[in-house]
Image 1: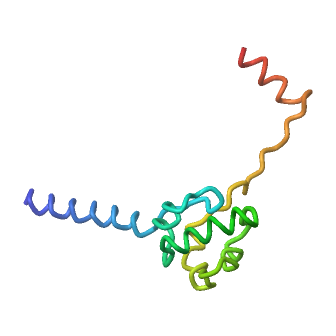
Image 2: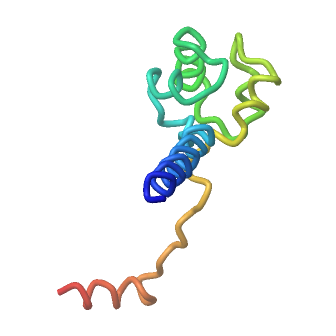
Length: 111
């Protein structure tokens, strides 16, 4: 009985770990290097990863997944397959802190 329980537990753990691997890694396409892009994106090898980085250096940061289709060798199908794998950094902007507001209090609290 114990061996069946051990086997079932092992099987369940394997499925959980496999599910996490299939979900894929999320990367910031605006800061990722060639190796990271190559590893994390589907249907993107080293040459396409280099093209993405070169395009980013020449034209600036990507603001949407659709902009990736402007890179030579990256089509809309590839963009759709990777939409959930890419982030674009700077998506959340920090609220400015006024000198007379919370920022002044934070300085006093950290002393």
